[in-house]
Every structure is written in structure tokens, then in C-alpha cells.
Length: 437
Image 1 (cartoon, rainbow, N blue to C red):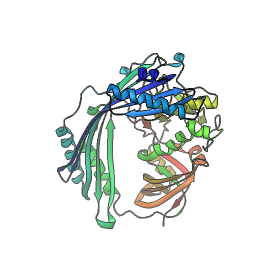
Image 2: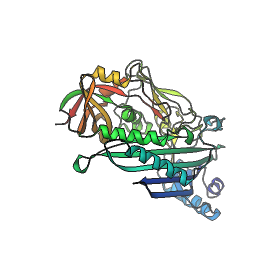
Image 3: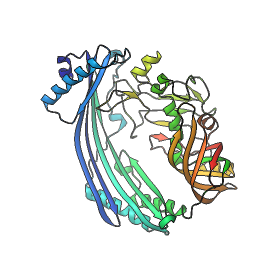
Image 4: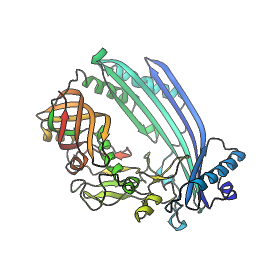
């Protein structure tokens, strides 16, 4: 692709190839409901001509197709608007160490058989149904994937790696008719043998569903809220989105000009580490060939900088944070990989005791977040807490606040799960508005 791009007049180019295999099995009522397998290759080419760029993609890798792709991409680039900030990395910026073996991103055990995935899904379903009060299992599923990625560019970069992922999930239902409530358990790992047992996953889904029986609306008013560890990462996701370089360049973030300001409580940091072994978001280099590294996005509560790729960094007069990500059909854009929030000394139960009366959120529905002002409103369900203890399950309520205030006053627990790409513990947030009864 790079050779073809040069032949057709590209001044610079990069090319991406992804080979992927996936297998998914769904079980329902003790029988196989669905089995899917897919294999394929996707290729993408980005060309640059006179500070103009264009991207094309295909799943056809025949030589004549690559030639046509290059010809069309160069023609598209010549018709695109000029942007002096687009361009490849300088060779001096490129990652020298492109070996991903130390990150252990690919399970050497190989592809599981469909029968293995079906047996695991059946076991999870049976375990959920064995929980007293479970009326049915909506689904029990097992899946596995393998991807090989390779990036090459005319600046001399060439590197690639493989990654695998295994997932087992179960969704259980309690009650019937309008009184039905559901909950789930889903677990994913890079190495399949590190997954919890199917029985544990099914049992957890069933117990969570039964705990939600006879849910009702909570009272309306201003109360503290505890975000359960299962949903706490979504709150930090709004912070991560707000420091994205594209948002900053557009001037459309509620954290505009906030570098050096306190955005989290003192003593709390948000660390990005793209080099954690056996974690799904890890990678040795970004989508522009720059070396990834561990860094503090927020250090001791203070925002240290933005999340940048080369283009957004150039627009802001800064250096890339090696945060570029891309697919075959589009140019790079900044994104975070693995993040970890400082954990506190208390358990989730300790946070509930500290809260006294308020809402424990275990599920979030929909989203209304103003990216410019930070105004926040989401549908929620979970449990009402009185005197520091869970009193009854709740649903059909809305929680609202402003992200600036919510994040600056949050209190983390100590239950963040280390195998996740986003390690965020349960969070206590004071002074939110709850709309219920």
C-alpha cells in the first residue's frame, strides 16, 4: 500500500492491517441459541499530499485493489482542505522498542472449541437458575477473539502485535410481567484460564437479580450517592473525555484552561499506563508509532495536561502524549488506554456507613451530559441506603449534578479490580439531586 501510494503521488502515507477472528456462543433455556464465527482482514491507507489527507479502507487485499485504493486516496487528498497540523511523526519520535511480548497481550492457549464455549455458557445459566428467586435467564454467552495489528509508514515505522480476549456473561431475571427485574455478571480476560468459573459468574448474576426484586422509586431530594465499582469508571470517563485534545482544540470542554487546576481531591491521582501486562488496553506504541508510557493525567488532584495525538498537539503548540488511536477507515485521534484512580482506605460498605442515607447506584441508563458546562444527569437504579445499610432496591430514578463539583469532592473506596483496563473503585459523591417519587 505504501509503495502504491508513492507511485500515485503521495508525499507521505501510513497503512494499517488488521486480521481478526472471533467466536461467540449464546445459550438459552438449556439449548444452543446462536453460534457465530467470523474471520477477516481489514486494510486502511492514509495518504498526505501538500498538508491534505485522505483515508480509504477495504477488506480486499488483492494487488489490483491496493493500487486502486492508493489512486483514489491521493485523488481524495488533493480535493481535501489543507491542514498544516496533519502529518506523520518525525523519525526521531518513533518507538524504538516495538516488541509487545513483555505485555503478554496474546494467550498462547489458542482458540477454544465451540463446544467448550457452549459448555461454559450452559454451566453459567444453570448456576443462575439454581439461585432461589430467579425466574429465567435472559442469556448466557461465551466469546473469544484474536486480532493481529500491523502499522507501517513512509517515515520508517513498522510494527505490530497480537491480542486475544475471552468473555463469559450471564443475565438473570427475577419476577414476572411488569415486576420483572434483571441484573448481570460479565467477566473478560486476555488469558482465558484467568476467567472466574462459569458457576461463579452465573451465581453472581442470579444473586444480583434476586436482590433487585420489588424495586421502587427512591425519595426525591438532595442526597449523597455511592457509585458502585461496576459503574464508577463511567464517572471518570467524563473526565477523560473532557481532557481529550480534540475537545480542547474545539473549545468545547468544561475543563478548558484547567491545566494546573484542582479537578480531583488532594491525594487522588488518575494514572494512565498503556504498558500493564495482560490488560486489554495495553499497547507498546500508539497509532502513529510513538512509544507509550505511564503518566499522571491528574496528579495529587491537579490536572497535568491533555490527551493528545500529533495533530491536536500541533494545534495547541504541545507535544503528543502518544495517545493516537485509529481504525482502517479514519485518521488518528486521541484516546486513553488503561487508567487507574488512586484507591482509598475504606471498603464500599464503609462508604455506605459514612453516607448514612442516600443512593447506591449499580446501574446507569442513558446519559445527558453537557460537554461544555459539565452539567450531568443520568437515569439510575440500585439500592436505597438508610443508617448506612441497604434498605431496599430502587429503579426509575434520575441523578443530577455538575461534574466539576462531583469530581472535586468524590471519595474513593478500595475495591477497584486490578484486571480491568479502567481500575476505578466505588466512589462516594456528596450533594447530588435525586429525582424519584
